[in-house]
Length: 248
Image (cartoon, rainbow, N blue to C red; front, side):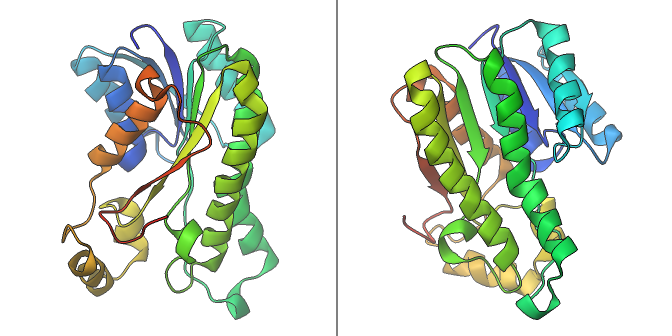
C-alpha cells in the first residue's frame, strides 16, 4: 500500500484516528478530514508524523458539497490526481430521541451527517479513482437491529449507508473500484461516552460473547484489510464487528 493516497472523513479522533494511523503505518499518504476540532486533527497528524508516516489535515463539513469539493481539491493538490482509498467515517447519533420528539430539522441533520455525507464525498472522489480503488463506508449494527432506544433516526441513516454501499458496489465494480462497509457494535469511543449510559454499556459488554466492548484499533485493522489488496474479491459486503452480539 506504500505510496497510495487515502481520504478519511472524520479522521481526527476515535475510530477515524485509528483508521488514519493504520493506513499511514502501511505507507499510505492520508488526508485526515476534520470539522469540529482542529486540535484533534493536529494531534492525529503529529502521531502519524512521529511514526514516520505522511499525512495532512483537511478541514471540511462533509454535509456540504462546496466544502467537500474544496477538501478533495486540497488532497489532490498535496498528493496528486489519484485517490486510491476513501474511508467515510464521519457520522454521529446527534442525540437519542423517540419518534414524538423528532422534528424535521433533527431528522435532516441525522440523515445529512450519516448518509448524505457518504453520497457527497464518494461522488466527488470517484472521478479520481482508478482500477484497484477501495471505498470503505461506516454503517452500524444499528442498521441491522434498529439501534438502541431513541436511535431510530440514526439506525435508518446507517441502513441507508448499507444499501448505498451495495448499490455502488454494483455500479463501480466494473471500473475495478470496490465498495464495502463496516458495521461496528459497541466500541469504546466518545460516541458511547456521550450517548450511552454506563449501566447500558456494562450490560451490553456482559452479554457479548467476548465479554467486553470493542476497541477503535480493532475497527482500524478491519478497515485496513478492506482497503488493501488482501480483500481484492470482497465487494458490496457489510462486515460486522461486534464481538458476537449480532450475526448477519
